[in-house]
Amino acid sequence: MLIVLITVADTVTPAEIVLGPLLVIAPALTAWFEGPWTTGGIGVLAVAAQTSIGWRSGLLTSRGVIVQIVALSVLVTLIVVMCVVRDRRTRQLTQVRSVAEAAQRVLLWPLPNYLGSLRLACLYLAAEDEAEIGGDLYATARTEGAVRLMIGDVRGKGLSAIGEAALVLGAFREAAHQHAGLPELAGALEGSVARYLADFEPLDEAGERFVTALLLEIPDDDHVVRLTSCGHLAPLLLGADGTVTGLDLHPAPPLGIGLTDAEDHPVDVVPFASEDTLLLYTDGVIEARDRSGAFYPITDRVARWAGSDPEALLQHLRRDLITHTGGRLGDDIALIAVRRATDPCSRHRLGHAFASGGLRRGSGSARPPG
Image (cartoon, rainbow, N blue to C red; front, top):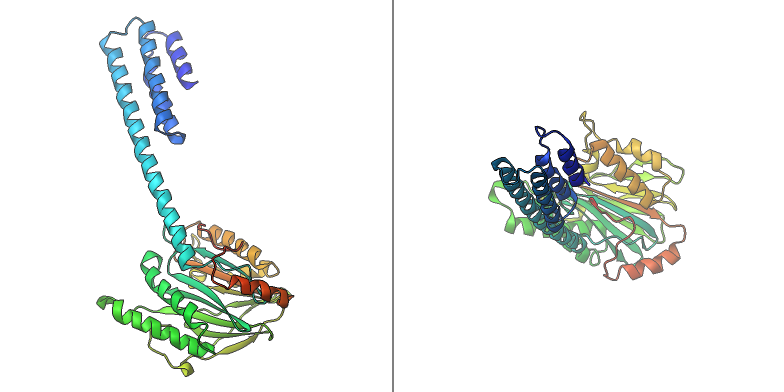
């Protein structure tokens, strides 16, 4: 229609008004939303229209009209070439994203909706552009009569921290079933990280690589949660009555410092009743800034949705964080919401089936962005 309008307008206007060169607009606009074949077809129509204009004016063989036709043909060719390059890069980007998604599913196993007596939801937002994973990590394991969880943060962010995150996750998934208490589990993780850093830590970063981690154990038959913090942020406890409490823990140094003895890792025991929710998060949440530089006030914001189920709570937080930062995250973000189910027996049977090793994405699992 644009080609027809320009052609008709050039025909009815006085000879000194030349509108034919505007025909290049048609293939240029087409390139925004179509591929090279359609763009090339529109370009051919534009050249044909330019030729028709010259023929109707009786100046087809004049130097000016020939130059216009040649110039339009060259521009159309360049636009088509740009379409081909753009489509090729789009396919490459799609492939990279698919690889990133596959890596995320392998490295960060999606948490099940239910595990043991718990209802779970998780959210992951990577700071790196086009990335699905980064330096934040989380994992869960079903042990005899309890559920163990870990959330952690590797020093640094983005793709450079993925190797250490993979190490800690693999060590936790194996050690969670071999140690009776959280202090022993923390000691085992410390040993794994220390061995890794001794072999792979760059000389210019000696002593500067570490991992903060929070270990939790939630028994099925006791309404408490046991926590061991290795330099990680304490979680928030959202009561069934809508209250929000910041837990006061006794933290040990981060993993990678060299503390492998069980007595170096204290255990805090906190009441965790039915319909209470624990919100675990990494420092990317509280360090998220708005345009004025103000940090994200997580305690105040969470109070608005304290009564929401875990999936809805994380979706509220996701939208609020993106709004607060304008979509520009300064660090990776991981959140886990854990609620004790009212009927633990049925949840135990369902959760045990999920814990057999298969990968399953819960409705509250992270997507970057996504």
